[in-house]
Length: 429
Image 1: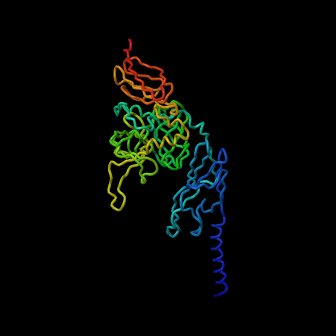
Image 2: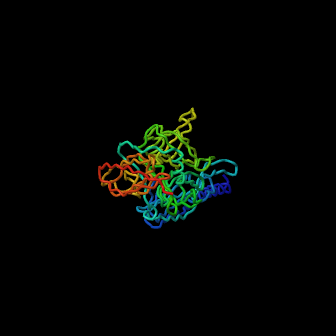
């Protein structure tokens, strides 16, 4: 080989080696800080350190590589930042996927890029975010619930104001208020990767909601909006759910009108590995994209589940279309999550208080029958009903249209069985 050609070959090899080495050596820095500091940082489910977190990554993770030999990020990256006593933040670190296409048209595969090299996260104190109370009913136990059912149109009329539309940067879903202080429950796949969502609710227009918690195990997330006196829905335990029961789904399906209502029955209840962690309610009520995170209600206006997914085709090669198979994550799984912030969410009653002192029951009939019952200001059913309450002081109110309201302050004792039969007088003109 002639010297000039040999030198050219050596120079080419040296240049190639430099390009490859440069792409692998010239690292850049990703920094994640938080207020307060000392928060745990997870990336794609793996704990990598605490804030301030500083790590070096190849330059090809931050900008497109100049050669096919450069190091490329071949998957998306999601960070989760959390600290005991504070809200949780999830951040989508990357954009993509992009296609790496050479000038000759050859496709070298997909890649992702970091959005920025500086991430600043502000964590809110849980005590400031999770205010108010969560209403639950009849947790645990096997006692038959004697409360009468409410007409579907009445359930919808009462529940719909608490259902919201959630808009993210690339996705849309539903949710519902679980406290009057602006805490909204929805699915994790609606909120994941979003720091905030636009919340559209009846009577208040569009307001900004902050994603304050995303659960890694269950498909659950919590969103917080500023304000008070929001309408909210009570949560029912899985022990109250039976196959064959009527259920109502409310949400915002794609191509449908806001607050769309569908009705069906509970088809089955239990764990489902294909659906994910938790207890699942299978229903034939129509559930479509956009319904995710909306409430599945029983005929007493209580949330029994969060509408989550719909089975469209069978698995395997035939892909047979399926009908009438939708899934909702049980409200009891939501109660378990809320219990971290609201210990009273485990109370076995619609009226609040503590279950540690025991449970009593109050049988309420009225003249006329069918009057509405309120316990501590919350609607719980219609007369005649037998209601289990935690021991302690409670205010009982009975209301009927055209009649004077009846109320009484009552001390419920452990294992007591009380009977009330108010006669509602006509309203005087």
